[in-house]
Length: 280
Image (tube, rainbow, N blue to C red; front, side, top):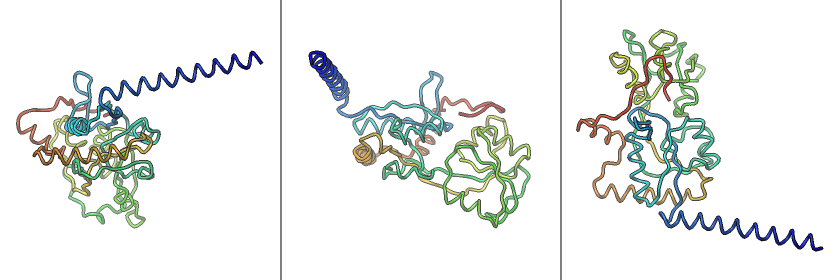
């Protein structure tokens, strides 16, 4: 009986210590901002989200995201992550926020999306210099198309490309640089990719821009993990922060912000991956 009573007392002491410890952490966090720390995951996009020379996340979308989160009253921990880690993080709650497009199957069931557009993302069909511009989509019948492994494309676009009538074959590349090289070497007929990924790579190779046809344009939003425990509040706060900054005349389109910076001569510190090396 004495042993049971002693064990009970020890368990109660440990439980109280844990509770006080959690409360202390919560109080410290609340004292800083009154709101949770937002874990933000970015994919690497040239000029929009990348690691700068100091090893810190930078770029037009990173700056815009940080500004909106701070205006909403939160602090952010921003990381550049592989796409697979972002998907797992949104599902588990390790990643609270990702600026992107909800076009991955099942992602809509575990996330909320903010209402305001952050940028328009163009998806292009690239082909080799000297080729005739193809008709869309009938000019693709029986051809080979390169896709980026684990990348997010618009589902309706992929379904159209996979229509039996087109009889397309697909090749994959784990990097954007590798995909461009595959196209230039004639290992496929077309490359389906985002403009902001391809243009800096081609420029870094010392080549003229690749010919393309624009296939789709899709708005980018903040995608919030439902597992965070505060997704609904964060969504409302971010939309309100967006509206408040817009009313003040702040430019809130990431692409337009980047263009304004470039016109002002503020070139981003964003080294283009060398040919033959994998992009992030």
